[in-house]
Amino acid sequence: MDNERFGTFLAQMRKEMGLTQKELADKLNVTDKAVSKWETGKGFPDVKLLEPLAQALGVSLVELMQGKRQEADTLTVAEADAAVSQAMDRLERSTARRYLRLFRWFLTGGGAMSLLWLFTTFFSSVWSELVRGIYLSPIAGDIIGGADGPTAILTATSTLNPLETFFALGVPILLLIVCAVLAIKVRKLEKKLK
Image (cartoon, rainbow, N blue to C red):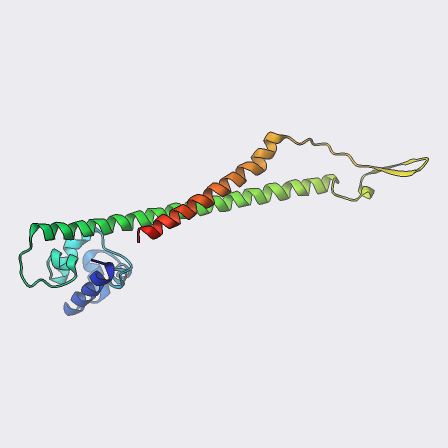
């Protein structure tokens, strides 16, 4: 059974009982937005809510799970197992999607932090070099005179440390790549679970 069929049946039973979404939500201690999501097929209630929901709508749990009224009151064990199994599967998928979405947002935040790290590292080093005069014209350096005319002397006081460069640029680039690849894989997995 799909969520849309469940939602249509839920809306139909709620209206037959003369309940608003808010009134049904109050009986189940959930929000009216949750009931709206169930009715539109965008969500599914928690397994713990299925029995109280069936009671509030005046239907059996099996009728609720199958999304239709039963002609007979009896149900085979296999049909009952199938209905419960479907409900559990839907709940597990919904929970997994929620956690995957949270993890994807965590990865996106990690990627943004890596970009910020790169941005600040790069521009702070460029700014410090500008301040020290390495990128400025020779006029900004020391000028001494000689027999053949003025000579500009530019001096750099820092040496390139490979380990420092790796931590300043390599680590955030590596983190950015890892976060991007994992976020894409998690998004694909999310789509698979729908």
